[in-house]
Amino acid sequence: MLDPCLFRSDLEYVQQQLARRGFDFDAGTYQTLEARRKEIQVKTQELQNERNTRSKAIGQAKAKGEDIQPLLDEVQNLGDQLKAAETELGEIQAKINELMTGIPNFLDEEVPEGKNEEDNIEISTWGEKPEFSFPVKDHVDLGTQCQGMDFELGAKIASARFVVLKGALARLQRAIIQFMLDTHITEHGYSETYVPYLANSDSLYGTGQLPKFEQDLFKVENDPAFFLIPTAEVPVTNIVRDVIVDSNEMPLKFVCHTPCFRSEAGAYGKDVRGMIRQHQFEKVELVQIVKPENSVQAHEDLTSHAENILKKLQLPYRKVLLCSGDTGFSSSKTYDLEVWLPSQNTYREISSCSNFKDFQARRLQARWRNSETGKPELVHTLNGSGLAAGRTLIAIMENYQNEDGSITVPEVLVAYMGGMGSIS
RNA sequence: GGAGAGGUGGCUGAGUGGUCGAAAGCGGCGGUCUUGAAAACCGUUGAGGGUUUGUAGCCCUCCCAGGGUUCGAAUCCCUGCCUCUCCGCCA
Image (tube, rainbow, N blue to C red; front, side, top):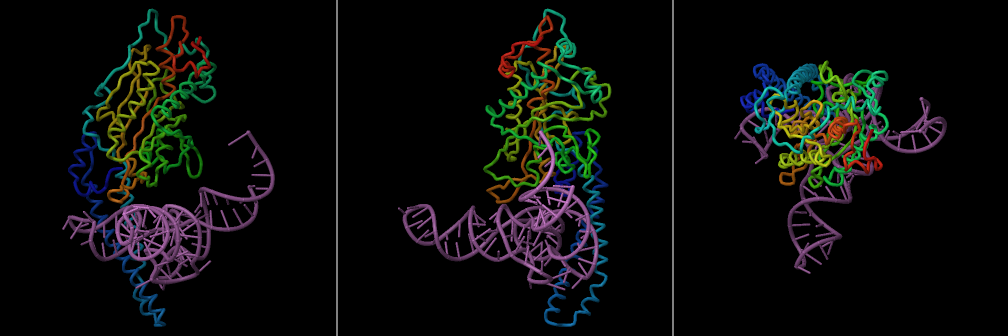
């Protein structure tokens, strides 16, 4: 959510900023609602004031033993007026709120103009793309050959876009997760968290998935409803919902491994083969809660922490700055890390690192106390995958494949594999 | 699942219809004292919002959440959520 004060003080600026996203903000409708809000809110508060003053007078008169009947007669219809005003105010505020929650975050000034992922800007590349002297197999063929990856079984148990991993591949995914957690804890200073995989609507509202993106989520029948988390970002960032964080506890740095659940509505026909796009996948997520002045640097740091995993795994990747058309709803600036997939002869997203600035914090009411002003102020929130474990698994399989279909285990994972150096 | 207790400001905890946004203590901040510190003493100390050029005034809202009763609700009624204790069951 954006700052409502900005909408009142500089609507033109708001429109300009939103236009960068191609978001057509209807200023006329907003101004009509806002004018009515102002009028009705002032009226409501005046009525409340009158009720309070008169009630006090009645209390005092009664205490003195005076006849209060004339005073009661005077306030007779005040209650009805007040109730009507409060109802209208509630309705108008709900409308404004609906409008505001549908508006995306402002983009950072460094975000380039562009329509879609083709306009993203490559910042850097790392690593040598492997050269193979034999026909390259993709992860599905490799996984089938070693009998460690079974999509038909996933479909039987649940549906399409689910997989069953077995044996060494299942262990490799677990090794990847352990390795990533350990690295972030010991080398990057994150603190490990374990969180619920079901979240309530307040939490999903806080991080921005609701109300606009409900169709992307799996909803669990319950009263009130639960949602399967689409990313650990949701439960972890909500740790600071309605919290005023102590200044000296900042920055808060959390790392968390969870499964992630996505309905992938609207992704029909996209990435249907293999483990690229699943309803359920494992991810290690990095979340930082920082003072506003530090969020730009924190964004660079967090991204480098995710990059460090790719480097240690010796996986070729590139870092991309998302353009205006590809940057997510709540984000002000996003770097994607894309890993090299030999079978597709292209880079594919394996991490997305975003600075949300105060957009989530305002919804979450996540604040810190500024010792200079003594006042609570909104924090900045950031997160990034560090990394998506399922996609890391397939990147390793494809980049580390041998002619016979066996897969060499990356050096840093061998210990996590109980000394196993290759999978066949 | 059964029975009971309870949710009040950063924390502990008073407050059962009328100047209660809320006693008191602790903590925090500022000061006096001191070479410095501690102790003691004095003062101060919740959040959100409206109006406004205003971190000035004035006003509104908030004592778990949502409804209700009343001129007036932290206080009474209903519903929900959460926490704790005991019993049962259970990974």
